[in-house]
Length: 220
Ligand code: PMT
Image (tube, rainbow, N blue to C red; front, side, top):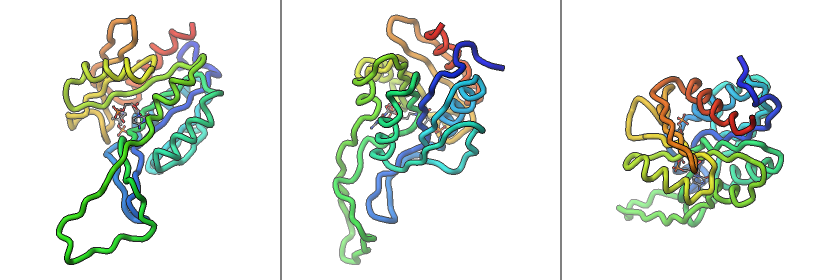
């Protein structure tokens, strides 16, 4: 069954957690599985859209007909999004992007030093992919997430204001049954000048479908 209005629309969707490398064998990441982003890719493709999926994971089946770009780091993800943004109609940033990364990448495996009981790793801010893209936005609809463990709606509203996205999808990630690395989710959609829309707990596929139904209205 196709969602009206998405046929031939060009989607750019990010999925999974980025890796911030410390040395060639170690990295900092997060619990994102990519399931939410892959669900968007599958539903959009089934609706006749052209989908490019920028993903950090190889653990999930790529929906038939979806163009996959594999990345690991924030820099690689940013480059891939940047290269494909001008041609896109919709960007959905479902990836869990590292906010910080090591100041210095050490190009060999850091040795364990028996004399050092503590070790300080210095981190610096990463570029905000979503914000850099909304600054260049023309016709595109840009959708970001807000993954929060506390003050969900207040923090999501702040992200709607600061990131320049058309939609922010507020995602409570304090619960074990929704959010990171599970098959179900529950979200609230925030848009400027519209009432919030809450979608109760259901499969990530169904969440994606309901969100895309709302997005599709912007095209009709
Ligand atoms: O992958 P799953 O296991 O299915 O889990 C799904 C999910 C919980 C990861 C997903 O639903 C989700 O909430 N993704 C966003 C996670 C996140 O990074 O949220 P944030 O609130 O830290 O960031 C806000 C937005 O800015 C996000 O759209 C993020 O992609 C984007 N961002 C963040 C930092 C950065 N440097 N660049 C960005 O573009």
